[in-house]
Image 1 (cartoon, rainbow over the protein chains, first blue to last red):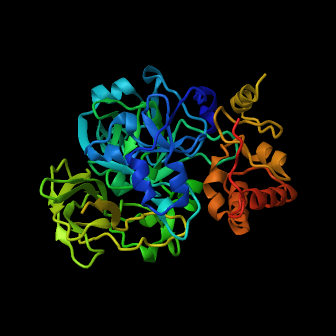
Image 2 (image 1 turned 135 degrees about the vertical axis):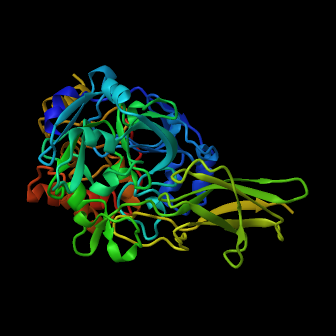
Image 3 (image 1 turned 120 degrees about the horizontal axis):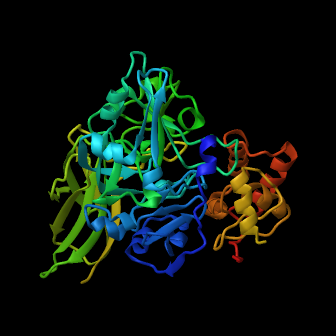
Length: 402
Length: 106
């Protein structure tokens, strides 16, 4: 968004505390088989307002959440992952913030302050997973270019805000609207680099769970997670969850910018997506949309009597987790894990599993989640050029003492 | 005036100036090799060089050609054909699978 260039300031990135620590996340990554992940597991660094996160890149800042934070169902704001496409990051005073709602297919263009959004629209709260489309890209073999994420380009939070549908209703949608586009106050250093603009199909934009959120886990949005307002698109990957959103445009033709037409796409035939984005499908390539069903083992412990317990989380696009199965014998047999608290269909679902290992030594435990739509994690990730939607079984190494 | 300040002024005015090292504190330095200066001047104004470190273990010529092409076509990096070719050469040598990891960080 070139016109906003004068209103943004570059976040000073120099004052950071480097914390050299190899935590539980590092240990987990050691088992991942990714050479780069192995080296990078030690780079834990604290950004302003954040705890030590695993750094992928300095500028633009891309930092993932260490695995230990996924032991709580809600991911703390200070540990929530950070992902930017462009290096010019805005710092916006809440009092000065304005949201513009515009477009040809609109009856009454609007400009709203944050105070108006809070006061004039009914607040809505829900728990939802925000997960990068490329989470776990660094685990693909052969490797795929792009940010080499481990397991931590995701988080689960309680979001509070207003329904996008309510804001659009005030502005009055005209017939002929096909997509809703979102622009933010961040920018690329180079004038010619395509601005990060994403759109949603009308159905998803008007869904009552799609929010313009101003709070995360009971606090204002952190600076690096979209302060003061971001889009929350439960069930869909984070590419659509526009941070620092300043402009909503109602389109009567499909969005055609680079970030829609040229990025975040994958071979349509390879992925059985239930929620699609028809106005953006072209040829063999379709936009990434919903989050694939997935699970993660977050820890293991030895119980009295020699039994083992593993804990984890499972999540999907909001169809709802039906079951999590665990195998301690390389997939020959599977047993059902016990599901924990249900914070809503878009949330991480905790689970645990206990068993008596039959042999001592190093071994692997696998987890496999299935949802109520009949989707199940795959044994090997589905290869695709950009390394999206890695949802292979999670394999966790344990050491059983004799 | 430090390179950092120059970088911030460049950013503030939205001008692409090719002759500065725009790295912020703590960012990795570029690996040694012919073409290093052109590479740093062309690439580091928009992003830190840990993107290169991250891809070095599988940084074949084909990968670097594809990345430089993407930076020109999609991100509109203002590079001539000769400059793009020189940067691909540098990246292939300095950040290929056979290269040694960077030892320097300022």
